[in-house]
Length: 375
Image (tube, rainbow, N blue to C red; front, side, top):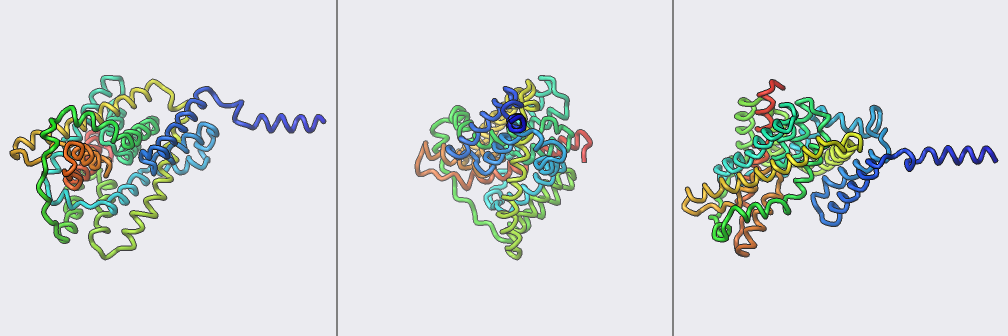
C-alpha cells in the first residue's frame, strides 16, 4: 500500500500543476488567445501558430528552453542569425520586385516609412534603455520580425529578443486593424479615390539585373547588411533567372516553411513568465506600437506630398505599405482604397513601397550596426 501511495505521490509531484506560477498560467492564457487569433481570425497564422505554441510549451515545461532542451537548439539558430537570413531567402524567392522596378519612386515611400524606427529609438532612450537595446527595439517599426530578431542578436540584446520578436510579429498580424484608422485620419476621401496609371511592363533583363545591382550598391555601402540583403536578393535572383526552378521552389516552399516552424516555436519559447512579465516588456510593446504607427503615418504623409508634386497622380494610401509586412500592408492599401471607390485597384502600386520597405528595414538595421561598429 505504501508503495502505491508513494508512486502516486511521485506521479502527482511530476505534473506541472504544482510547479507553475500565476505568471505561467497568465502566459498560457495569452498563448491560447494568440492561437484563437491565428486560427479563428487568420491573423498571420503561419507565424502566430508556432509562436503561440512555443509560448504554451515553455510555460508548462521551462526546461524545454534551457541549455540542452529541444527549443534551445532552435533558439541558437536565431542568435546566430541563421533563421532570419533564411527567411529573407524565402521572401526573395516569393516576391515580385516588378512594381518597384516599374516605379522607382516607391523607394522614397519605403524610406519614409522607416521614420517610425528612428522615432522609437529616441523614445526608447528616453525610457531608460541603452543605445543598443533602443536600436533593437525600434526596428519593430518596420513590421519585420526576421530583421528584429537579426538585429537583436547582432547587438547582443538577446534578453529582449522574445518581447521584440513577439511584438514585431503581433503588429505584423494586426496590420489590417492598426493601419486603416491612421490612413483614413490623414487622407481625404478625394485622395483615397485617386486612380493611378497602370504600371509599365518590366523586362526580364531588368528583373535579373535588379537583385544584382541592389546587392552591390547596398552591401558596398553597408557591408553588415549582407546576410539579409544578400539572401533576399539571392532568393529573388533564383526566381527571376528562370534557370533554377528547383531552387526557387525549395526556397519559397519547403525550406521557408521549415524555417518558419523553427523560428516561430523558438521565438515563442523565449516568452516564459519569468522572462516576459516585466515592466521592460510593456515598454517594448508600447514602443513597437509607436514605431509602427509613426511609420505608417510617415508613409502616408510622404504619399500626400508626392501626390501634390505629381499633380494628383499618386494615391497617398500606398505610402502606408512602406512598412515591410509583405504583402499584407499592400492589401490594406488596396482595401482602404476600394472602400472609397470599388473600382480603384491599388494593390500592384502598393507592392512597390511594400517591397521597398523590406529593403529599407534591412538598411536601417545596417545603419544601426554601422553606428555601433557591429559586423
